[in-house]
Image 1: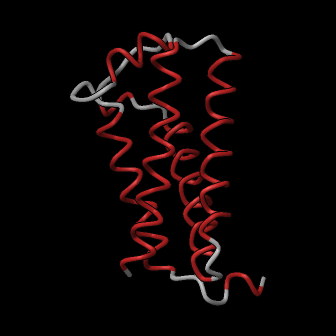
Image 2: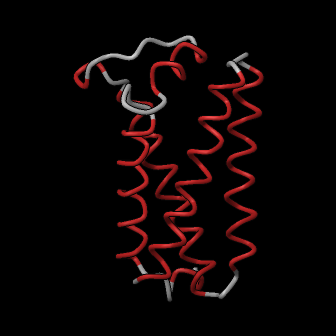
Image 3: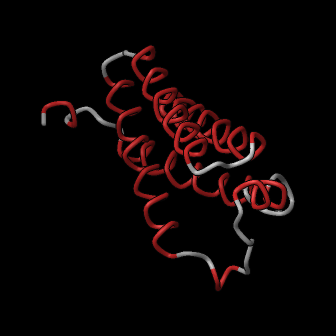
Length: 127
């Protein structure tokens, strides 16, 4: 647990929330949502019909990734952070392939994780 001693928790929280909000826009009809939904074989619903479990697990996953980024930042291990982000993005793409998402939907998912990780690194660097 010594790894958590020097974690910048403010930056971790801001990275998590910012990445979650970016995801909200990323998967909205304003950006990639409609074609992503079609390629994922899901229907975009209104905010009151959002899948609660999916939203909660997304937030938790972002928090865990942001914490990993924070630990690597406190240990000057940027390459480790980049590998962690890439691993998560590749797992997302792999899972998408298993459930037969379209290439477009998998690409949207993959690049969202890369963007979220980049935002988390930037926030750690700024704060």
